[in-house]
Length: 158
Image (tube, rainbow, N blue to C red; front, side, top):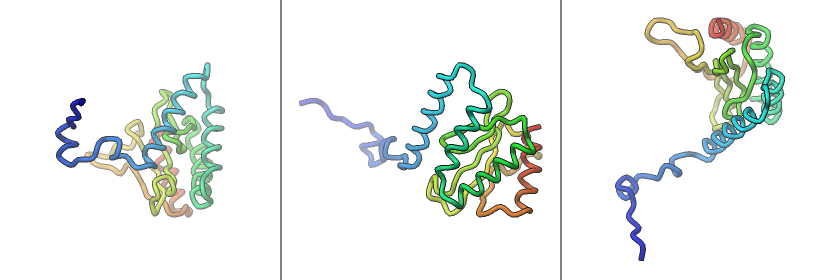
């Protein structure tokens, strides 16, 4: 009979790494793998490819998330035209000239949250002293939120 010893962590009652991920997290990782494969197949990926992928994902969202994502897309295209639209873990994102994601949108429905979020990665130029916000909850977009997002996106892309 084969030795069926388990690692000390699993034997001590901890979940295995595969059980630590939710179904939604595993789906996001599969989306990212598809994005990487698709990008490697394209001879020269461009803004049109990324924007088409992004708009396809937005079209799949429920109405509340879709309306926010569509408005964010319009605001970012208008105010930070140097950023390239693409998907990132199956969600809308915008990358700089080096291909690094600067900002991204996560639909509330993606992880069954009560709000959507709009966030920034380390490629964003948002540093303010020793501490600054990198993600914002979004329940809906009013002119006040839009003005703040425009300000942040312009600075992040600079």
